[in-house]
Length: 404
Image (cartoon, rainbow, N blue to C red; front, side):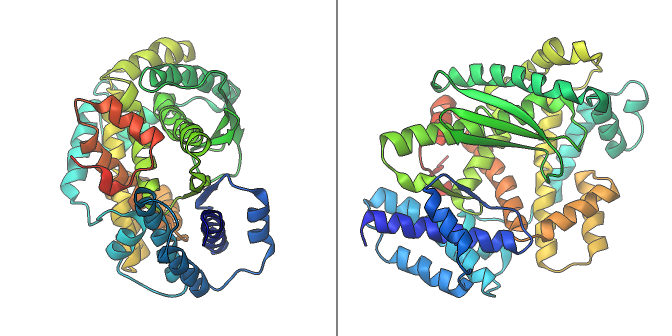
């Protein structure tokens, strides 16, 4: 098998597996930037049986025609695709084993002490004066969110505010890793989507940050969201890896980014740490106060945005535990009660979260999200953090590469 034949087989396997995952009631789990004729073929053809896709993965694993370093990385990606294909074919490994095969990380039940600590952090960080400072923690959190929410009648202002945040996050990211001149990032409001925000790199130094126009937008989260989706998060990673890996190094496999594989774990871990990487301590809050909140009539309330964001990120572990409960086929009321108790979600939101976790691939996706954050949390605490960030943005790394 020549390198080109192998790369085409790899791309077609990813396209076919993703089509079956998305066709099973799930969302797309693939970022694909390769030849259009390959994706069009995958859409036109009758879907191959999942068992055949697993066999196709075995054939790719047999003898990748690349040097050892690339073989190790590509083998991990193909193993993830094979594991998903086998699951579609009816194989039911315990969730930790399935996650190890797909994500390349060890996952287990997150001890509730983590959530208790996050709740305590929220208790200290949320306002204490006025009505927002009294009552149960979940109510105080919702009151803080509502106090910083852009009113629906001002929603048309959001793209302009995102533009400001993009300029600042890009400027700070450029100080860590050089970014190309001429980059354009636009903001587009979307209706009827399932996400809060999404960053998409279209190539040619052009990107879009999509914002869900059907959900309230908390302006205290503006930099947290824009850094995650933009710089130094998903858009920066996609753009720099295309420039470095594809255009300079000829690693065309970077066309294919499967979101249930090990590279995704690091991408989402990077996104969840993005704001902390470029804003120290209360810098993000100070910038928001001076550049966004004051003109929207939102006065300081004594809250600590950075502490709130870190606590809420830690609570993604609740979703990871809920994925275990779903895999164990626990009753709906038990899972929603768990989400309400520990993730501080209102009951209707907990029900929506449960429905999301039941869709194809989402349990695994949620595990990668939380455990990627946890893995990078220790790895980025290093004197040479800037160099490690540059590696995340420009190299093909696996979770196993992140040694302490």
